[in-house]
Structures are given as structure tokens and as C-alpha cells.
Length: 225
Image (cartoon, rainbow, N blue to C red; front, side, top):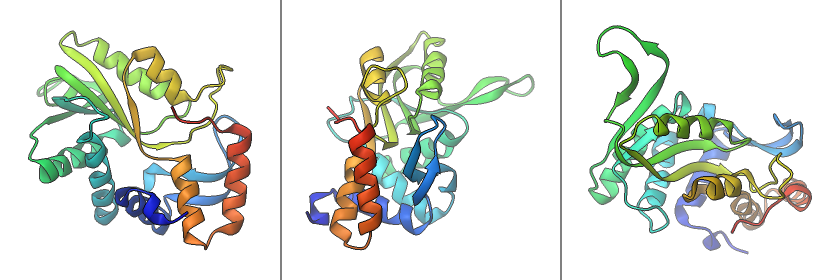
């Protein structure tokens, strides 16, 4: 399988993530208690070059037919704030589409403009920008914020990585699949576990890591619908 089997934006994102230590291979304990052969640390997305690559990948998904038309990007605090901002800029640069972006404060501000929201008014068709869905707790908290705004309608969620593995509910479905079914909106990733496997296969440099990731996928993996 060649790297051409992957979208060029996905290849660029994976290569940048590996180069900057955002995507790591080894032995990692997840919050779920599982031992994972790879780990994605979105907290390391802080350099201008890496943010630019990430934003371009987000914008490509946001402008695709898989995400309905929307008015505002919502980036939940804290990691979602910068991701939503750079994605809005990149989307405009790529397509000329002028959209708003906003984010929430963790603590309510009682002076100045006050409130818990910053940026564009939270109304119209909203897409949430997220990093990695694990238990789904954080994304449900973000959706609760939207529910508190009667003029806001969630139409989609775009995340950095879909681990494509069974959730903790016992349903046999991934957290992404559970969220899609529960809220009736598409959840689209920049990359999924299958993309990581394809990249490792095509590179020819990660044979040991590839075998470990394949074994993990066989044990915990869920086929993306």
C-alpha cells in the first residue's frame, strides 16, 4: 500500500505530528486503563508550522461534503480555542468562506463584557472543533453549552484523531459512533487509526511499531462506518 492511498493533507499532518512528537509510538497507559502502542498529544500543537498544517487539514474537512453548511466554529476551552481560530482562518484562505468562531470560558467573567462566551454569537449552524474523543465526556459538555443557547443548532463535529476503538459503554461501538447516533450529526476526523496504519505500511520505517498497532487494532478496533 502506498502513501498515495492517503489524502495528501492526511500524510502531511501525520508526518508533521511524528516530527514534532505529537504522535508517539511506544507503550502508553490511556485514561481507560488500556495499554496503547501509540499516543496523540494535542497539547504539543503549539508551533506556527504545525498549527498551520493542522489548520489546513481541518479546513479541508470543513469544506468537504461530509460536513453540512455552517455559520460558526465553536472551540471548547482550552485546546479547542486555538484550533477553532486557526481553522477559521485557513478555511477562509482556502475557500473564501467567511465564518465566525467562538469559545467558552471555564470561569464566568463578572467584569467588562462579562459572561462565559467569547467571539461570535453562539447562534445559527454550529460545528464543534475538538481534538481526540476518548470517553465522550468533553464533547457532551460542549454540546450542553450549545443546548443552553436556543438559537444554536449543532450540525457537525470535526476532531483531530479517531482512535477507532471500542468505547467503555460495552456497546461494541466506538465513542465516535455513539456520539453520532446520540446527537444525529456527523463526527469527522482529520485522521483515524486506519490512516495511521496505512502511513506506517507505506513508509517502510516502522515495522515494529506497525505490528504493535495492528495487534492493538485487532483487539480493540472498530470499523468506521
